[in-house]
Each structure stands twice: as structure tokens, then as C-alpha cells.
Image (cartoon, rainbow, N blue to C red):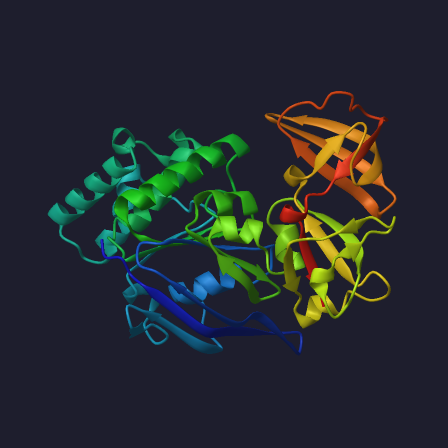
Amino acid sequence: MAHAALSVRDLTKRFAAGGAEITAVDRVSFDVHGGEFFTMVGASGCGKTTTLRMIAGLETTTSGTITVDGRDFIAVPSQQRNIGMVFQSYALFPHLTIFENVAYGLRLRGISRAEIERRVTATLALLRLEAYAHRHPAALSGGQQQRVSIARALVYEPSMLLLDEPLANLDAKLRVQMREELRALQRRLGITTLYVTHDQEEATAVSDRVAVFNHGRLIQIGPPEVIYTRPETLFVADFIGRANFLPVRLADPAVPTAGVTLADGTRLHPQRHVALRDDEARTLRGPDNAIVMIRPEHLALNASHGDVACRVRRVQLLGGLIRYSVEADIVPQPILVETTRPLPGITEGSGAWVSIPAADAILYHR
């Protein structure tokens, strides 16, 4: 299969709704490299699925360009784009066998019987479905049915694979198993893949790069580890993974590197600084004119010493992770601390101290 390269520039989609105009996708631009696993992630209604549908040709564009390997795709009908599409619903024909489901589109295109046999047999083997070729969809599990829908998309030998929330209907354990199968399959084929999900863990687990959407805009794009460790906005920091946000006062508003002060007077010197965009910068008003973000796994909790006094409200065992929820006067919401082992002397209701390492804290300021 060819490894298509995709370029999207200023892609915009507006809908008319009750006499008003809604911008679902607002001047979105990005590139996807040939053979890359690229994921668009965000909450429902953020524009990620509409973007995917415009790339597939299933939705018209208001403005902007879509090019694949240098070819303008805007005027190309969806059936001529050589794109495989997998939807959230399996949409299998219940009265057809698995072989017939996968072969259906090829028959509509007038492909010869011998070529259909070759392609369908090879695709079913690729997805470990050859033993189910003569069964009907009702006889298969949810995961197997999803593999059939992927086989149906791949049998066309597309240059690009688009998946819209493909695992949303599966239970949690099967969803993890299927996402690993998808990633392994994509690597084996080397096919350019665009994936849409609202599940940030799913996005970071399988992707080469992640694009975070919010209110129709592309907020940040990069490898999963960069998105997680160096979020460029408060929204991304909050949406990808768990985060603690501590309101602080800049020691010198003109010099963020001068350090900050917590509500209890504790001084911190975060080593990483991010100047916020206008929309988020406007939220920082009053004496607390900046925010420190730190991930729960970077905080330390001690019974006798640290930066901030607190009281342990809740201790949760989450598999191989222990989450401590603590209350402190410096912030109205609980502070989360996560460790891999129980902390001696730290129980629900006990007093403790939180330590905030400067190297792992990020300062967001205007």
C-alpha cells in the first residue's frame, strides 16, 4: 500500500442552525506524514470528526484546502479518494457472511471474481478472521465485528485509513486490546492513518503524533510525550492526563523567572514557563496572576516535611497506582498525588506535607 502524505490548510466548516451560523471547524491546518499514525482528540463537538469527514469527502468544506501527495482533494468525489473509512458503528450486513460483507464494496465496483477472492482472503488472514469467513456477524464478538469493519476498509487497498471512534462500543478491557491490535496492524502495513477519539489515554497510547482540538480549533499538535510533558495551554494540560493547578502570584510580573508565591507565602521557582494565549490569559485577573501546573506523579507526600501543609482526604488503590487526594489552604480543590507504593504514615484523615519539585512544575502566565 502507498504511504500517502496529507496536508490540510485553513480548513473551515460552518453550519447554518436556526438562522445562525455555527463554526464547527475553524481554520485548522496540519500535515500528516506518509505512514504516520495521527490522532485527533478532543471532547464531543470539538470539530475532530467533522475534520475527518471533510478529508474523507463525506462533508463539504466551507473554505481551506486538502491535498494528498500534492493532489488537490477538495473537488475529488469521496469514492475516488482511495481512502478506507472505519466508523464507530460496525454497519455490517446481518444477512451476509463475513466474506460477503468484506467483498460487498468490491462487487459494486465491478472487480473480477478472482480478484475479489484474492483480496478478501488476504485481508481476512491479515486480521485473523479467515476462520470466520462463512459465519454471520451475529456469531462474532464485538471485537471480531470491529475487525471485520476494518477488513472492509482495507480490502480496497487504500492509501490512507480513517477511523472515527472505532472502539467506542467495546468494553474497557477489549478496547485496550483492540487499540494495540490496531497499532500493530498499522505498523505492519505502514499505512497513513488518521484516528479520531475523545479518549486521551487511547490517543497517547497508539499515536505517533496527537492533535488536540477544542471548540473547532486545533490547540496543540505533537508527539504524545510532548503533549503530556509540555502542554502549551491550560486546556491541553487539563485534558491530557491529570493535572493540579495552583493559583500563584508572580514575584515580578515583568520577570516570570523571578519566581512565584503560593497563597500561604511559600516561594517556588518553576523552571518551565508558558505565556498563555489571549483567551486563557484573560482568566488570570486579580492578585493571583499566574498558575502553576504539576502532574500528580511529580508531587511527593511526606508525613513530616515538605512545601505545603495538607490533610489526606482520600486514598484510592487503582491497580498498580495509589492516588492520594489531599486538602490544602492554598487551593480550593483537592490536590492529587500519585505513587506506585503505599506511603508509610499516610492514611485518610492524617496530616501531611506536599513537596513541589521546581523542575517538574510549569508556570503559566499572561
